[in-house]
Image (cartoon, helix red, strand yellow):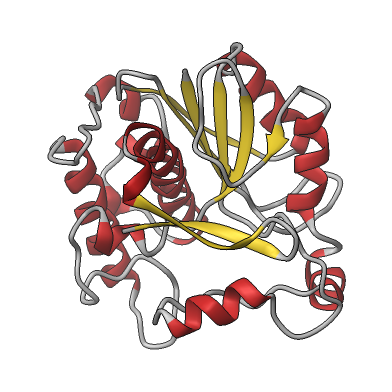
Length: 245
């Protein structure tokens, strides 16, 4: 059983400028691969390498967007849980991103035998889920609000460099439950193995994309090992996310 995390760049274009982070964790909790991709074809190629008969894919992007305007019910629920998320609606995504890329990717994965579901990953099946890595920095890694990993008003590049360094170190320590085992050589094959203090702009964002992909894959591994450690917020009809407790 493998678990693939996809930190999907939301913009749809011929060759997306923004890169998508990819990561795979095996059934024993080993991080076995990380990468960056541009096109959906490249993402599908990565999935084909790692899928096998049993595989769960977690995508950090809206996958079910039925509402034309406003926000999805799941985003209202998350706000009530003090876990705000970017509002998704079809009009906004068409105007800003060229469409709902997550929906298109789910269709591509369906052609590969993956079914969108909220149910715990099980052996012998290929499944796909919407995940939300950002809250996992607190619930899984135990990091507080002083750790900054995203570009926001008032957040300096140095703050993000420090925050992403803390996230990588927290993952690499292997103190998670269930354990995540990371061989340094895996990270060294990607930008996530570089000195974060030397990264700026797009390179720094891609560093974060890989870490988010690792978290996305780990959420599914955790769901597989301990179903009670994950809450399903929302529903399959209007949109949902897996939220680590």
